[in-house]
Image 1 (cartoon, helix red, strand yellow):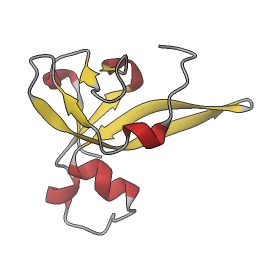
Image 2 (image 1 turned 135 degrees about the horizontal axis):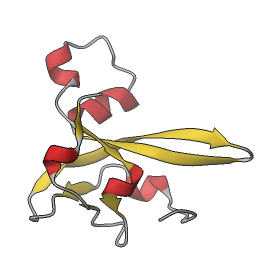
Image 3 (image 1 turned 30 degrees about the vertical axis):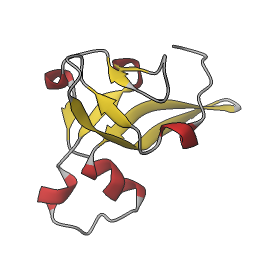
Image 4 (image 1 turned 30 degrees about the horizontal axis):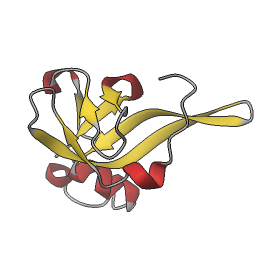
Length: 97
């Protein structure tokens, strides 16, 4: 997926499905790094932890902010941006913020 351009406003809030078709959570936040003149997404935060991160609500109890997953960019298939899917088992995702 390297070099692919994706409009984040079309992804935020989309339900992410696991490889077995079950919902994992909604894609709520992305993390990016600057490289030269560009900015590249490195991770996506799925679930309530991502929403809290996007809203900068870091003062909430850790039980709320840990409910979610962090997926590396390459762990998510965006071939159909309206229906993002994991490329790996949920167990391979990192927990929490």
